[in-house]
Length: 241
Image 1: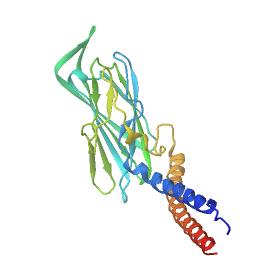
Image 2: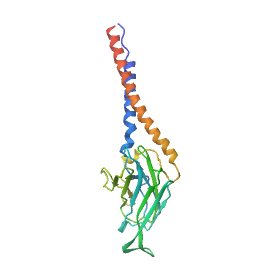
Image 3: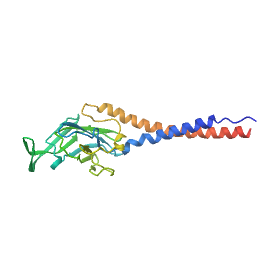
Image 4: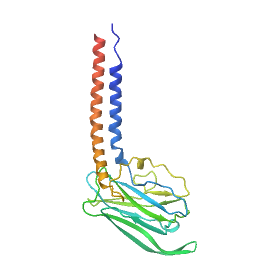
């Protein structure tokens, strides 16, 4: 009697396993949330805050973003935005109830809010990510700075990213003296769609790639399952022979 080969079964199992990983990995970007690309800074320095903003809505586009700046001990004396092609920016400066002294300087007013608004046709849709940057400083000597973000969609809904770490909608956090918390969900975000360097076209390609990846993942899963069935049937046929 001929001993049945285990190779077809092993190949089928590997194909199914690989296809399953593709199918699971493709949608991971949907769980990403608003975050800072670099979330640490040293006290007294000036730094660029890069906000990564994924569009998590299935049937709407991101067309507005409002950043609420820290006040009190976490006040940033200087805040300026880096222009994003196709988006306007509105900077709101407010008088401080109590002036703050930094060295020889006394700060009586500060930027409290920055709002980015897309011009018609510049919104970005499902499977895409926006990049928005602020240049700020000096960074205050505190544990961390929390910067809530309101994300507006074309259907009129607004998602407020203002929760604590581990919540469904955590606010971006800049760690200064505190130890940074690893943000796994932020790491799964897709490639940029709207960026200060004019990366709109590259982002559209990335979004298309995401759709292709999802489709290939589904096809791979089906083919892997078929391969496994064929391997099992072939093994049984050999046994009967």
